[in-house]
Image 1 (cartoon, rainbow, N blue to C red):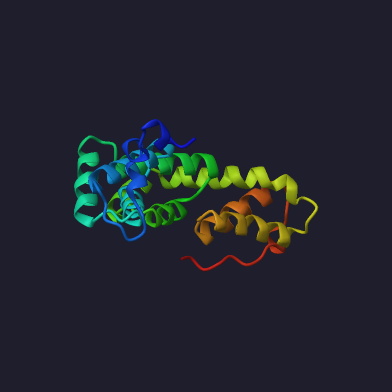
Image 2: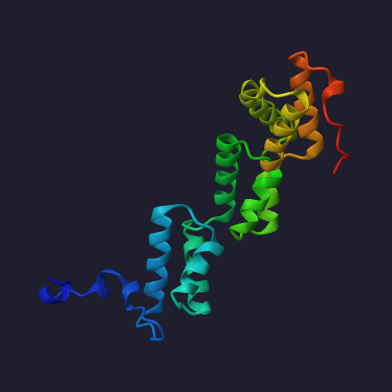
Length: 193
């Protein structure tokens, strides 16, 4: 049995169901609110992500702006809070460096000023310590390799996480030297970025 047989309408509960390809929206503001609330209930979202989701549903720009402005006023949408939480989570949980965090936030539509402010919360010393911690976790798994291969693997791992080449090389060199690896068996130090 469908909801229509019992006198219920899908559109009353879910304004998004009003959307058909090429049709006019009965109430674009309800659709915009529904899209935003559904997405926010699933996971934190940036203003740009919500705007894009509403746009895909055919919500006009002026309605999107009005709904997003209201959501921002009541702090349901807060790019600065999103960015701060993202940086904390991804730096601590995944060990990402400031450069990688900046890239991820920009991809999510966070403004450059907010991105800069969020990544500044990770001091250089903390970033370097995280690089050391990541190398320590991977060192044991590379012991069967020759020193040059170990060095390349560890430096590459840090590079994929957004660490500058100079920092990655220095941290890996120091950690390998602490294990008694001869510096002459390591690849040459890269030029600073």
